[in-house]
Image (cartoon, rainbow, N blue to C red; front, side, top):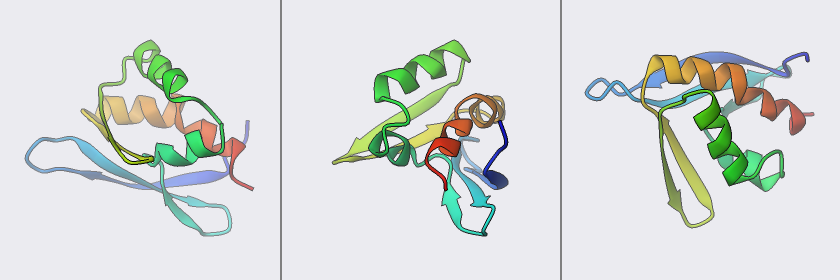
Length: 97
């Protein structure tokens, strides 16, 4: 499947080493955060339970905080971020036009 986005940058917390943002850009230059899973759940690309199953299947260490209807996802390691980009981020292709 052709990717409809390109990863630009990962922001890492200097103290903890956790990845708090993974910036990507669409083919037409629109920036977005790959860790904004609210987009995936809102457009029904995957359920929250399905997402958690993917995390477990690919051994992605994460912290998920819910604030109202939005979710803040932080990944624990660079390896988890790489696995997220490889196995979970392609779900964004379903919602990007």
